[in-house]
Image (cartoon, rainbow, N blue to C red; front, side, top):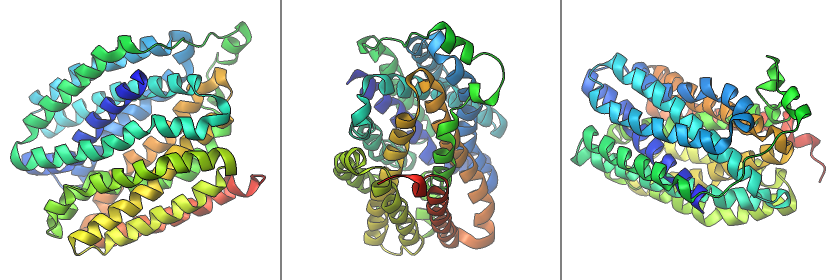
Length: 379
């Protein structure tokens, strides 16, 4: 429970800042949509560049020690947002904060993978990620509310307090670090690619990367999109509806993964996610916007939980650091590139067509999953 609580707090902080960052960059510094997207995505880039090295060394260094270091750095770097008085300083703080957050996420993911029984990965990791699901309601809701009524400094203060609470909660975690044998340590030496990533996880990572790219268009640009279509009040409840659907479906999805296999969840999950993006693209009323949120929650919630469980299922325990890192590398690539690419698309085709393109990418993700993994699964 303690590790799930810490993961929940860190996820709230991430989403609290992510949902408003493109708007903050636009309002404070008058940047273009592309730079606003970069202000959101450079956080993910910071996570991306640190995780391969950390994933390789986490079992030797100790995942608990790594969690303490990442959590302490997160508190310091969140406080640094108060002093970001230019576009470049904001980008620097975002990048470094992303690196610290990536450290904590890698450590928590590796710790929980070691304590959940292998035959119940779908259900166990599904429950673990329910905290993240709850954060998708709380973080964006609080962020969008504070940005309208309080301002960015209030958001930073709340994020800093939550990160400090996560840091002070770490002594409650009771988990033993994985002890590697001499052969396993030798396996990780050198600079070969497989010492940084888990090859068995790569096909799944590639397949879900496009879905994460599509989701990044929601998490990073919903605030600006809702202003453009005059639905800012409904947008404040968007992630509440999203999280409610994920919360309701997650236990069923996890058990189905364990009993029926990954294809029974991932295929419909990606298809429903594509439908949600299509509904979002044509939303003209508050009800339609919230329906899109619920459909997206059902689809992307299944992709997120079962993609992670599948990679853990395929990865040997002594390489769980690399497996967890590989999952985040591909997810971060989608989340990191998404806001930048979407920022370039919006001036050309507008918000609605942009979300239509994202729906098409989700369909392509389904094709990739089938080609790289799904068709090889024995029923």
